[in-house]
Image 1 (cartoon, rainbow, N blue to C red):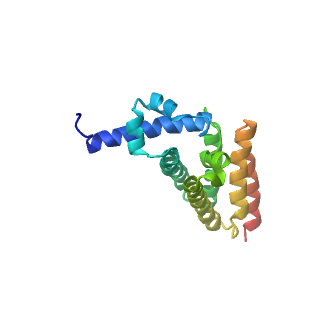
Image 2: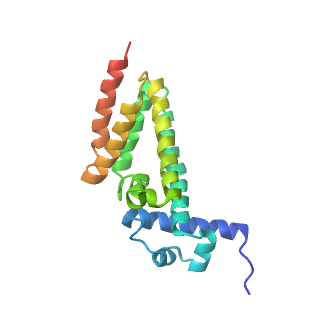
Length: 190
């Protein structure tokens, strides 16, 4: 009987699994990917996969949670590179434009997960809502700091730009949303 995996081996296996599952789910969709495909891509046996994540929904939640930390971290770093509050808000849309132009862009992983699983998976739905609330909090903080008291239009412009870029395949939607943000900032000037 083999020795139980060490903590380091478990961490490495978890990362391999999440890397493989994230790439497959984002490229092909969650429902289109079977666990055998995740097994083949990760190189891990199904038994090990199910020890790490007992159900596919658990794996989806783990993928979304890890992606959220990385995605919001990149966004926040790009925004916080600017000192001026208005420049920060505009930088968020610049970052979204760059992200939408990345090779393999298929839209928002959380919107995609919601579209596929919706209310049929309470755990996935909760993770989607957690991500969107955190993203909207960032936008609200940056909007208010820039002098826009109601962040709702900014949030809608961001979400709409992401969806539009994914559906049309045209990554310029965040640039057009940025123009609308500039108008909001101009209107908010004292």
